Image (cartoon, rainbow, N blue to C red):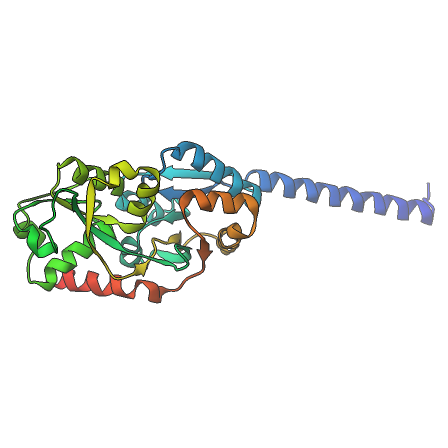
Length: 291
């Protein structure tokens, strides 16, 4: 039986619509099966860190239209190992591990604090210690570092000692790592350490949240400014994911929900930044490595 021209056209159009429907369904399924975005963090200083991280995750998921998973580890080294192995896509780390691992990661965004993408390292002692004027007064004392891959909590004081031709292991009576900037403050406040090096941004935030804690310490010296601990991305992450994440971070300060989250962190927002922000960290790293 011969089909009319009208019938043939109708059948062809019906097949075309079916193909479009199947392609659309396949696209929905593919989107649903996309792997989650994985973001690495080290210990968060906020008291309500669980609720904050949950709120931040919800915010990112709503903007990215993608599942987001935060992965917390105790040290920068653990986080960077996961990024290098492809088990994390993004990470919020210190400038020191960033410059040490630039062959594996790229700069994504830099937080803005007090109007600038920079921060300082603080050298602190117990509040009762009114004699210490600089790191040179701490010979044979007990010193608390935060993390061996921290710029503010390790590299800066080690470089200061390098400037006077001293090595931390021989200069201090004892050293130890707390694996958290907050715990450096707590150790010095409690007298467990006679001095310590801490991220100035975190000391400032603790001074707002727990002034009773920081009041038990005294800032002896503030370092020069360094590039603020950046968001980095693994070199193997898809370009579309890199662009999407960067756009969301840079836009956080421009909407009400994002601005509230930033306010909890004490930040103004994020900028794209550039590697020149971390030049002084590279300089210090090379100097102490060559020694």
